[in-house]
Length: 124
Image (cartoon, rainbow, N blue to C red; front, side, top):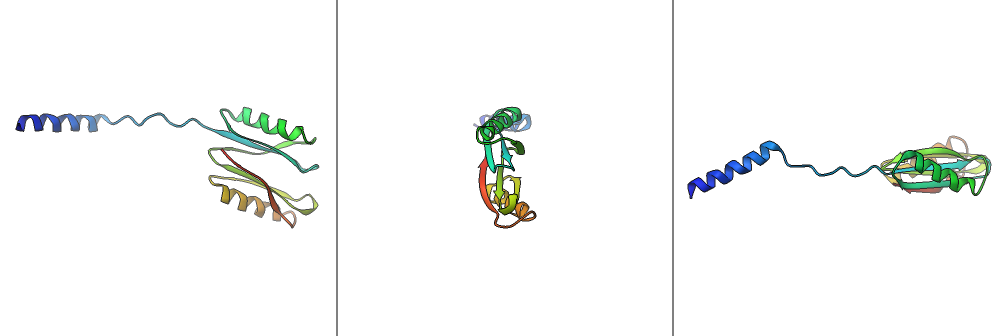
C-alpha cells in the first residue's frame, strides 16, 4: 500500500515537473473604423482574422455612404470609438474596454470643438 502511494506521488511530481499543457491561444480578432470627415459617414468591422481584411471591410462600408473615407482606428481584442461634434469636430480612441474608448474619443473630439457625442463604438 505504501509503495502504491509513493508511485502515485512520483507520477504526480513528474507531471508537475514536465509542465501541464497550456492549451491553444485564442486567435487574434481584428477590427477597424473608417470615417469621412467631410460627410460624417463611418464604416466599421470587427472579428476579422487579419488587419487588412478588417480595414477593407470598414472602408467598404464607409465608401458606400460617402467619399473621402479613411481608416481612423485599428484594434485587436479591444474596442474603438468615434465621437463627432459641431463644426466638423471629431475624435477617435481605442482601448481594451468600451467605456474607456468612448470616454477618450469624446475627450479627443472636445479638443477640436463642442457638442461631442459618440457616433460609433465597437469591440472585437
